[in-house]
Image 1 (cartoon, rainbow, N blue to C red):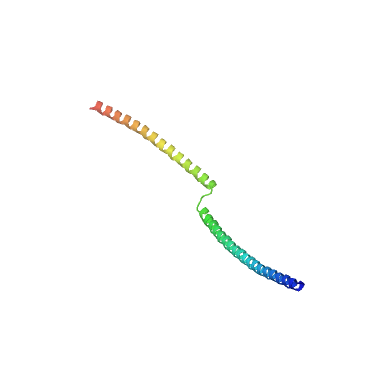
Image 2 (image 1 turned 90 degrees about the vertical axis):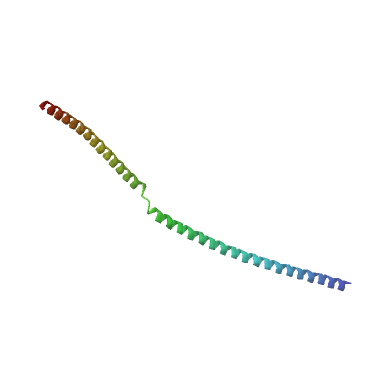
Length: 123
């Protein structure tokens, strides 16, 4: 019986080893698949980073070209102040012209009145 027990134990041991070999093969395949998936994920991530970097570089260039069309705040303030000064000068000139015109109208009315009075007496 010992020989049969040994053969049975040997067969059981061989079956266990075969089962472990099969499980090891399955685990190796799964591990290999996991590494392949991880490599694929890294490739996708790398491509996405490159896409985003290209997009950001393009955005930076667009912003630089836009910035060239804008006046710096300092320049705007200077030009705005000069424009306000010119407007003030024009308003002052207009007001002076209106004042001169009013004085001229008064003098002209007075001259017409004097002429009318002078000619009415001489007739």
